Image 1 (spheres, rainbow, N blue to C red):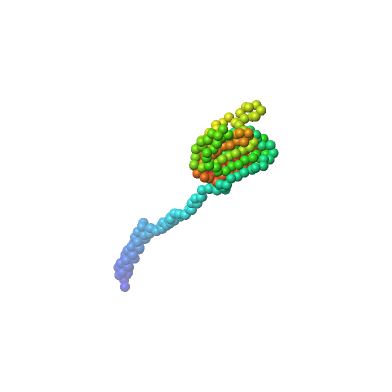
Image 2 (cartoon, rainbow, N blue to C red):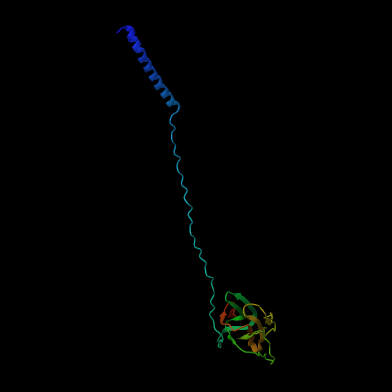
Length: 212
């Protein structure tokens, strides 16, 4: 084979190789220009459902004071110490479950007293009936007790002889008499109630508590 013939055969082969190289180069260039996009996975955020905490509300039952007393007459027939003989004040107070009537006295010890339910009429030493408002009546007798100093004749109690405190079952508290240091008051009530009687000191006082 002549040199010219060989050259004629090599030229097409070289051209084919060149074309192949150019095609490969083009593919590589296209690959560089359009790289495969990286896939980014966004983190999944999970929001927890709100938790509802059950609450229990405890309602305290109202406190009720239980009054312990009775309706029977309460007495002290033997005085002790040197109680009285003067009344200095009469006070009425409103308390939880009861009303308190307080007779303030001079002296110390325990006076004679009778506290109990009595029916009208209520007669003073003069024989006159003293009216008291109410449907039932709690009588309070105390001795020695009077409204004035027997030596000076100066009043030691200058308060009202008819009281209308407007508390609980009490309609009226009425002075009846204090003849010979025996004092008598009547508490008019709207209905019969249990009561208690106590003697307290410093100062001396007779305390009558009446249930509402």
